[in-house]
Length: 181
Ligand code: SF4
Ligand code: SF4
Image (cartoon, rainbow, N blue to C red; front, side):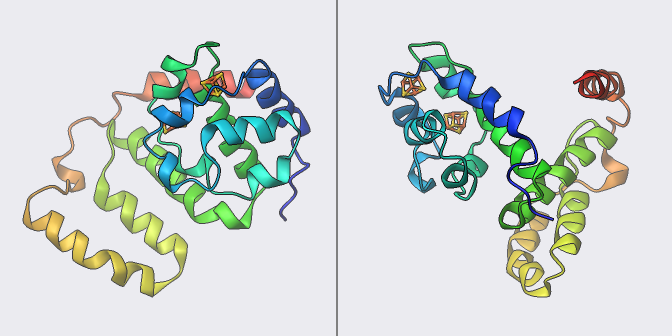
């Protein structure tokens, strides 16, 4: 069941990460996804500072963060902004937010695929994701794109991937670190 107060410590972590933001707007000006966000990165950090947790989590802004690190590199205060965006995604996932379930499922299957093959297997990712939506209309929506990519040889099928297991050590280390926190 959805519960935005399930992980109060995590939101506090984000507040600490951005507490010295001076609202200069460099992050928003640098962000490739800002134009599709309801709240630009600068606005998100102001809402976080003010403790407006619901406004932040009920928007799709942090979901659109592509983890490109541009804002982090350019922030004059040296704030860990990409990490803060990731933390917001973590809060949403741990709160079982219905609104973002589809995006979270996409992330989940993306990571699982990378974990299995050492790189993403697009066919596996989209198959798992589309099954999880339980909506045949979504599958039909993506069908023309799938056909186009297949025609250009851009889709990798399981047998063609050679990276199985190469990231096992990395994922094991991450799991070990997560279990400790
Ligand atoms: S670049 Fe840094 S200091 Fe400027 S608004 Fe963004 S988070 Fe705040
Ligand atoms: S890391 Fe996210 S928020 Fe920062 S510039 Fe990239 S897409 Fe935008």
